[in-house]
Image (cartoon, rainbow, N blue to C red; front, side):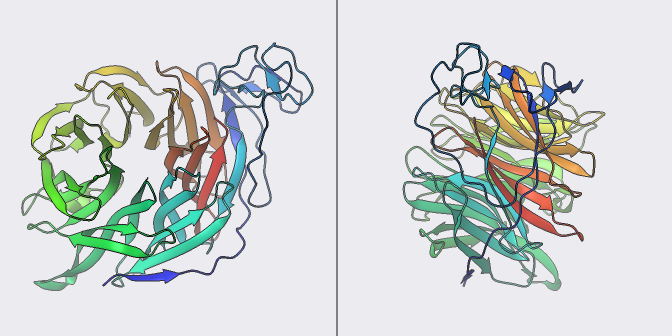
Length: 452
């Protein structure tokens, strides 16, 4: 029985600042001093800025008169002489990647955002953990909290890893720890999937475990025809772990389950990834196959109808694993991984047949975790890397051909700031989530909206 607890919503905490790296800032005012980073080709950095609480996204009624003529006019923060969105100076003559709204934890020091989704109406849904419980919460487009639910079955750590929205329904996947039947002192993990109502109440749920032991659900995606696909890690033998995909109908009926061995023990897998992308032609799951040095990034495809494996392919390896994936309307994918020496974030565009169209490590950082396609064909990725103090969140936007448009270095002011999730709102705004260090070794949920 899943226990859901509604949290009374209080005032959000103070957000941290951000530091911006713009690939094409255009003509700007003298408000910021610009210097070359030396790592992002064609990029520049501006000094960090801070805000005091949740910041409301502004509304605009159109571009300023003269926007796009290459000269600064009244109401213009920049003018690069064109009307291209997301290239550093947007078609309203405001900077790309500008912070529009930001939120910090409802319960500081206890919350962690793993994934974000945006409804057709612009509301933002987050999935993660609050304390040791699964946590899902809803916000409006300006990131004002609307509702919050926690779900708990045991005293073991439980996580809501990924969230998807379809029509008016919210779907979430995660993991629940349970006692090993033959050894109560040992925990095993079960995959949890549920449909939630508009304020987080459980409509239906399912929990399942591999016949060999663990099953750890980490990703969920809604298909065009209304079904759901989840992915994660599962025991495929007594000693080996595999990537899995499992398809459900919208009302919770299991259609098929498929897996691909990774030749690794479950305890060696950190629950980031595998990347999951779904098209009408295939279900793509990517992580890594181990047992070699370096490990090989591997992309596996399953037939959407019955889960039969279509093909698997190792990508050019940097000693890393695929942690996120997204599919474009044309069927192509972009996957994100981390690796190399020194370790870097790698974004790659992959054709539907597994061929690599481009690879870029221009988004500086060491760990890439999530990726999203903009309707224009641009690619937005999130991760993190070393900052002045601890780690900072990295947020970058690429053109369809892999050219870096801009990058942001987001600093919460303390130690460990980690970027976990990114998606695109109906208006093109970028919605990002993760955690920021709240001081005293406490991590706070972090949620923000940026201009394209």
